[in-house]
Image (tube, rainbow, N blue to C red; front, side, top):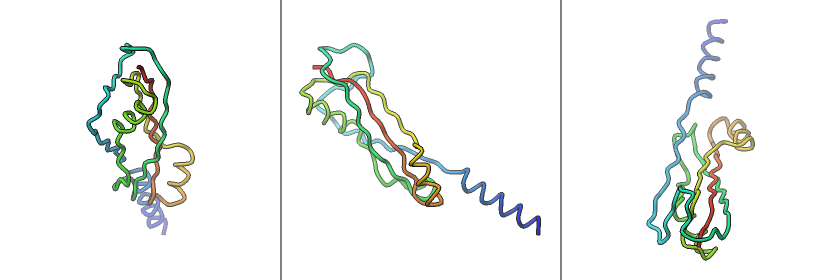
Length: 122
């Protein structure tokens, strides 16, 4: 009986410890340049932060949403009336709430948070 329980525990632990999460970012052509440097061509107009939820299914095997980071930044540039985005940073993480949803659904639904931040120069 002890042998069956230990095999069961090993199987359960291996299911919860495994998974592969991939962020598939689409790169749409944009009219505005995106730069990771600190040298703006003009004056910095505003700082932006974009937050999106990205969902995965079955321990990360299936991605529900693709993130079009370039389009999101381009839309932000147009809304601010700028000409480029600089100091762009992308964070992809599982927050506490995301982890709680992952545990509640036993790994069937795995949400992550994508956060894009940077500055718009004009």
